[in-house]
Length: 310
Length: 109
Ligand SMILES: Nc1nc2c(ncn2[C@@H]2O[C@H](COP(=O)(O)OP(=O)(O)OP(=O)(O)O)[C@@H](O)[C@H]2O)c(=O)[nH]1
Ligand SMILES: [Zn+2]
Ligand SMILES: [Zn+2]
Ligand SMILES: [Zn+2]
Ligand SMILES: [Zn+2]
Ligand SMILES: [Zn+2]
Ligand SMILES: [Zn+2]
Image (cartoon, rainbow over all chains, first blue to last red):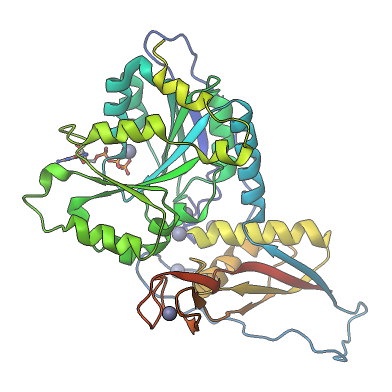
């Protein structure tokens, strides 16, 4: 990470597979694109986190017609009119096509740090066993601790370390999918970096966005982080075992999400005690993926990956 | 700090279209419901554009008002936050504008 501005682009994301016990898959490193060059002008110094910026901003206006210049070349205005995330969205569409072609369902799991995504995934993979053919792509800034936990559950897992990056983007997912090489008809759980802000903005090409919120975080989370809850297809309210000890009104939380998002579904469960997880398994079982709906012709086989007992 | 990734996408998109010409200005349209803060983006742009043909370019950001349309009473109204609520009390509201995150044009020398 860049010490001057705290930006993460020097550290290109690292993508690597973890060996699964009993499965003979060698660890594999997928090289990232070359980190781009950038430099800072001398004297540029500031710290991040929580402060407001006081850098002077250049609030100049575009040149009006007839404005003359002394330079040899007359400036030219090139109209572009494109979305700033167009490149990510294009890569996301490619991921969607790639996934649809293999009938693979990818679920993007997002939350604040520590809401219980990995705990829920480990339980899901362990309890569903062969009923659910699944792999995991783990996004974290550093370490492969979460990926280790998944690996112990005996499932193929790829770790993506984003360094200073606070979210996964479509390009990182593509590289994660290349490394994971998911089987035809399987499910890929993508555990996004713990962060309720940035991941909401980046389409990965996933079939559905699952947002986990835990009862220790407060039932006003949806109000504070509206983008995330607006983007959700399913909201899981986790750590329900702690409801007697914390002030968290489930109905109030659901009501707040509804005001942002008319189509989200809700589940209340405890990833540690297993209370309520059957509803999550049912959701996994019956959920028609968005990839499926868009591609039109793929209805059916995705659900078999879970319901078929092989 | 997703603004840094977005500044990087912005710079990549402009480099793609300007073929090495010096960029004097970049015009953007960013709605208040887009999830991107203009000031944070300006800061990230200054940092990320250093050493490229966009270094020192003016970033002009048009910030349109967020507007909603109520399907219940038919009113168009200014939205102050992302909560879909019409002054009439209905939550059956469509976002008409405010989610823009667009690169409008660039001015090259
Ligand atoms: N009481 C209780 N604790 C839980 C539950 N689910 C997870 N935890 C605990 O919460 C902590 C964080 O859980 P993780 O599964 O690591 O959370 P995560 O969302 O994967 O965290 P990051 O990957 O860091 O974002 C751990 O100590 C878990 O044991 C639950 O349902 N009830
Ligand atoms: Zn830097
Ligand atoms: Zn700063
Ligand atoms: Zn985790
Ligand atoms: Zn961010
Ligand atoms: Zn981010
Ligand atoms: Zn109304």
